[in-house]
Image (cartoon, rainbow, N blue to C red):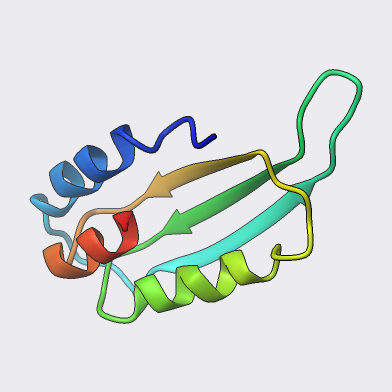
Length: 92
């Protein structure tokens, strides 16, 4: 169901080993209903440094789509790294 379920934890771990200056992570998402060619999908955009509380922000963002049929979730990351523990929570 989640195309990146295996790659996400590895990507987050590698990304968090690199630390950099930046603001708190911004999280936004968009829902695209099914078409004749594509399944219903949510795309989540995460950008900025990973800081404590980001996993809760992601949970709340994904909760916005609870009533929608979703067969796939894509994650787009643009992050210099940050908190290792919070990154693990994001992957969970």
